[in-house]
Each structure stands twice: as C-alpha cells, then as structure tokens.
Image (cartoon, rainbow, N blue to C red):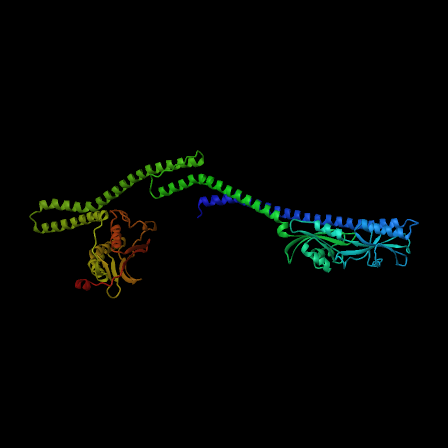
Length: 583
C-alpha cells in the first residue's frame, strides 16, 4: 500500500511537474525546430544574395562588351582607332583578358592581343545572355581560372562583324572568397553541367583547377531534379567532412547554381546552446518547484502522519497518546477530534473494565454457587443427621464417605481457581499414552454405562511415548471425556483414538453429542467460558494451559447435532522410562 506522502508526491508530479516537463519538451522542440529553420533559411538567403551578385557581375560584364561594340559601330573609325578602343577597354576592365573584332567571315581584323588572336564566335553550345552569346566555361591553361568567350554582333544583320572577348572570372573568385557562413562555412559556384567554377574553401580551390564536377553533390543533384520555377533548396547530408548543412540558389539567366555549405555542428551551435540553456532553466525551475513542493508537502502531510502515528498507538493500547496539530484548518480540527476521541476512549475503557470485572465476578460467583452449593449442602445435611444419628456406626461410615467426597469436589473447584491464577509447574517423563488412556478408559467404563453411553477405544498398535506429566495429562483426558459424557445423550458413543502423524502423537476424543455452535468454538478455551448452563467454565481453559506447557496443541471441531472432536498433538520422544532409570 502506498503511503499518502508517495501519493501526494505523485499528485504533485501529475499536477505540476508533468505539465512543466511537457511544456519544456515542447518549448525545446519548438526552439530547436524554429532555430534550425532560421539557420537553414539564413543559408538559403546567403546563397540567393550570392547568386544575385554573381548574376549581376556576369551580366554587367556582358553589358561592358556590348558597350564596346557600340563604340566600334561609330562610322568613320579607322582600324588603328578600333585597335586603340579595344586595348583601352582591356586596360580599363580586367574582366576581359582579350577583345577581338571579327569580320563577317570570322577572320580577326582588330585585337587587343599582342599575338595571334585565340578566340572565335561560340558555336551552338553558346548561351544567349542579354543579346550576347557566351560559351561554356573552361579552365584557362595560364592562370588556371575559369574562363568563357562572349560574342556580340556589331549590327543587326546576320553577316555583320562580331566582337568577341575572353571573360575572366577572377573577380567572381574574390567575391566567392568573401562569402563566409560562420567560421567554416563556404560558398561555391557550379555550372549547369556540374563544372566547379569557384570555391570559397582554400583547401578546395585546387578542384577548380582540376576541372572537377559536382554532379554527385547532394544539393546539385536535388536542384537538377527540381522544377525550373524552384529557385532555392536546402538539405542536410554527410560527406567526408562529416554532417553538413547545404543551401542552394539558381542563377536562372546562366543556369548556374550557387551553393553554401556549413558543418551542422557549427550551423546549429546557437540552437543547441539555446536548447541546453532552456533545458538547464527548466531543470532548475523543476528542482525549485520540487523543493518548494517538498517542504510545503511535508508541512501539509506532517499533521496527517502525526494522526497516523497516534492512531497506531491507540490501536496498540497506548491510550495516553495525543497529537499536536498547530494549524487552524480542517487538519487542526481533525487533531482536536482525535484527542477528544482518545480521552473518550480512556473513559470508555475504564467503564468497560469495570463492567468486565463485574461480569467476571458475577460469573465466578454464579459458578461458585453452582459448584459449591451442592457439596456444602450435602455436608450441611450430613452434619445435621450426624448429630441425631451419632451412635449409628453404619451412618457414621456413610457420613465420612459423603464428607470426603464433597470436600474433594470443593478442593477441585478451588484448585481450578488457583491453577488459572498460577499454573502449577509440571514434571515431564516419558509416558506411553496408549497405556495411560487404556487405564483411564477402564476406570470410566462404569460411569459411561451408568449414563447409557458406549465408551470405545481405537489405539495405535504398540507404545506411543511422549514427554509429559501423567497426573496432569490424566486430568486433561478425564475432563474431555466427562465433557463428552455430559454432551452426549443416552445410547450415544464416545471414542478415544490414538495415532501417529508427521512425527507427532495424536489423541482424539470424539462424541456423538449435541455439538457446539460455530460462534462459540473460538472462545471455549478461554477462562470462565462454558457451553453449559452452570459452572465456572475452567476445565477447557486449564486443559489448554496444561497441553501447551507440555509443548502440545489442542483443537476442536464440532457440528451441531452431529458431535464434537477434540484433537491433542504432542511431540514424540525416543526416551523410555527404563533409560531414565538407568541414568
């Protein structure tokens, strides 16, 4: 059974702790999810802004080339003037390492290159950007930078001249290098066919020079499978560097993808720290609440525990126990009611004791009157007659017999009272209970026949030795047999049995008498308890004390109208009278 303090603690946990824990769990989960989404969205925004800047840079470079073509379209310019314009633009705009003017047949006419021009109009793989054709990017053999060829027509005819330039993305490299996400987050730019153009990680720049592709990169693979209208993406993945958080954004006009990568441990460091701080705060709040609840609960439960202790003390018989409850609430009222109840119990106990003493004295008096009145009356009558018949020798002999018999009866009653108050010490010797019961049965046959009863015996073959006091045991047996005679009507039977069970000697005295009601069986061995109309009721109480003094037990089984059986059990002994005599 759980204590009330345990149930109260569970109630406190269910009423306060569990909601707090649930709120804390939801708060931590919401904080972590919200903070992670914020970090992911932040990385996507970085990738989007970088994509916008790179697109603006490339488009601006194309517009520069278109501006040069507009200058070259002025009429009346000599070749040397066109040559000067191209060289001046190359010097002014480092995005182009070379500018060359091609005629309608694709032959170079003017070039900023000091040597033979190396670029031409892009083929069918070129991409149209702001009215200009841009070739696929490749790694330059000289400075190992990604480069592409951009071509613009000088006029609107199909057979007009072309202005072509070699676009250098060194500035885009610097732009990508300046993008940082935390301490270890970098940006990278990938073309539509997976070619790595720029990487912000210094340790990965060699991959650009090698012309590595990013076809297997999770962000690139995801965005290639997404519809063209979806401009951004984010994903968590694992690679050789560990757990990573990546975000990507498209450059729609170029078909490129700008990606931002950052280790998850760094990306989610703030959410993790906030989660830890929130967990610590919730834990401290929980501990504080438990501490307050503990001390408040103790003050609340202390009166109840005091009442419990007082109740147990009263149940144990300590009627002087009182409780001190200082509160003025219902518990205080309950404490006062308990103390009043204890005071009332003391009064009732004294009253019960008085009534019990009166009842016991009444029963003793009635028993004594019943047990002694007849012997005393017989002695008195005999004394009156002896005065008149003193000279009659035969009557004097009868007088002596009567007085001795009645005085013996009085002595037995007084002995019973004395043995109840102070049991006589018993001496134990090896006794054959079969022999003792045989002699007793023979001596009581005349009494049974005089009452119209049959006294039978069913003894175990051979001796059955126990340690006991022969006189005391004969008194027990005689008392049980006489009770059986008195409870059995004429033509009834009383049987004495002996047997051996579980290493013990068993004696049964069974009758076919009226039986004992079930509600009386539990009290027949108590002092002054009797099923007879008269008498002290000490016989069975004294018998039980003698049996228990000898280490045995006595039980009774009875059914009204069928009969009663008393069963005695004693430990067997291996000692024999001859052995004791030898000792």
